[in-house]
Picture 1 (spheres, rainbow, N blue to C red):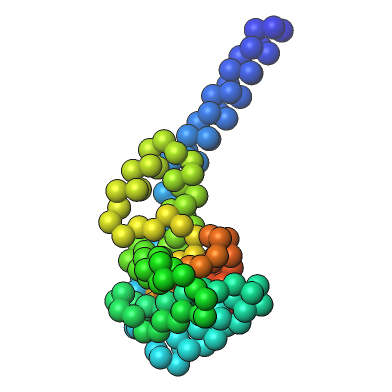
Picture 2: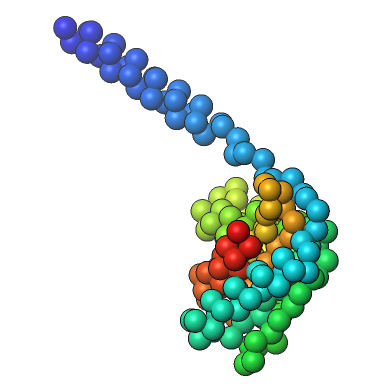
Length: 166
């Protein structure tokens, strides 16, 4: 009886461990491919909604929109925004379009430490929330980068801008 319980426990433990290892080895889905560059009209929609969100929070921010090639389409520095936020917003936007993922993904991975700290060596990867890819029809057409508030506020404004295009 004890032998059967021990065998059952050993088999159950082995199955749980195997399932955990298999799940850990499942690679994440690939990021979306690039599409045609964002148009000026699309960028204006993104900018208007991002600015409205910043104003709603009473935050002075720099907002930059890049096309799918990393070229600037629009830039806006709201009154009272610190000058350094312009470069930070551009870095976030470039990171989001170059790596086709939100900058929050880098922030979260680095916060876990360990091997993820290698991400700090990726050229142009901004590990601060506030940069998002802009997609249309499942393809990256550009990105938005926002700076001037906390990283969570920057992310909130960037999301409002991206949501405005949908």
